[in-house]
Length: 410
Length: 189
Image 1 (cartoon, chains in turn brown, green):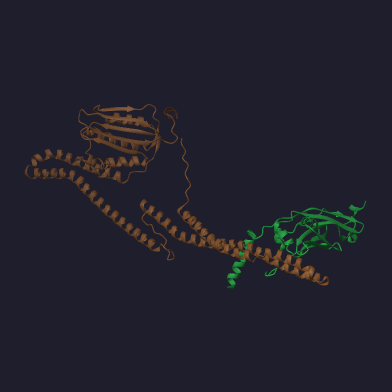
Image 2 (cartoon, chains in turn blue, orange):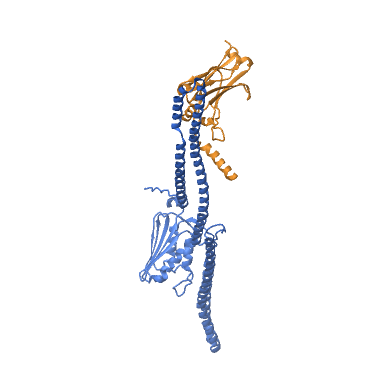
């Protein structure tokens, strides 16, 4: 495996700070060098090396001409002069060193103060920008109530105020959009409900009208049709009851109660039960480990998909059910040779209340998807018109999966 | 100058001097420091090593009088205050006319003239069997120790408000030597 080293890059703030520091030092050093050079030149001029030699020479030249009694005084005075000259030299030399050192202290102090002020200013700009960046990310993640702390002292306060206003407007618009979507959804539900309820009501109404008509015009034959009419009414009431149950199921899908069980056996049992006309081909992989899921909910999923497939195929059509292992997941694939799904409808088939069947609530596949999602699984569909449809469900195997034989031994 | 500004600059210079001094000094040490009791006299022999620098030589040849003080303190064991103290001074001045060094030792009555700087180097920092303290005060049962230190006296320069602190040449640190503890009985043969 090739390991790629990440190159260290200083942050924007650090880059600016380093650049500023470099420029500051450059400017200060230039100024210091310029002034000190001039000053040193002056000091060198007043240093008096030749004066010492000259004075000594003069003393030696004049000493023989001085009366012997006055020579010690003459020498003492000459020496005193030389000491004074040397003091000037010493003074200028050490003063020069002190000036050099002191200028460094002052420069370091000024540079530190300027740097602190600069960093504070830079921080006051970059910190709000970082917060702004984080807030923008939060907005893009869908968080609605994002507000930044405003500060009248910040140079970016106007920007912060504008962002806060924008975020508030966005939250308001999002809330309105949700409200509008809810209204739309309720209208759709009402439309589907009205349509679904109307279907069984129409035959009930017609049957009742027929009974009334018979009772009014041919009472003798009314008794004969009574039994048949009651059966129709009873069946339609059952349909209505089933419709209500399906809506109730979708509205309150119970919490999954996962257990560890043999999915292979469940699939085999369901297919045997529903394949009345021997139209199914069952392929079960050997040694598929047990899965951890709500057995009843997964049964609902398999039955729903299998029933849809069996309903979609012509009398000579086939349905293939395949259960295999795919990495760390169990893969259930149901393929039919039916009429396929219109590509325009393919994207919407998992939406609640969407159906292309004459008698359908549009909740079956919505419930299937919800159950698969609750199990951290994935469902996908591929379909071609007049060729058939494939549904694939991928369910993750438990983390402590062991081989099938060990599971069976448990 | 504004008093606040003056105070600020003084503070900056004080702090700066601690970190980066204007004169790079050296750290002298006592190469040896021995003492001996002869009769009633406590004699000391000692010499400083690593004590000369270019700057020091400049001062030595400037014509100014340079004073080196050796301070000897006698302590009784487990006591912080010295019970006796003696300061020995060596001073040197360069005669710019005669171009000779004149040295005065507090322990000797006469001054000494030296021709070269090397001779001054050897003599200035050396104590040889110098009678430092009287041994009369020492009690036979008591244990003692000696502390010897050396420092350079400050030098007044024209044009400077404060005298120049020659100890800057030694990083403002006086070399110090502490003897082993001893008693008077240790020296009785």
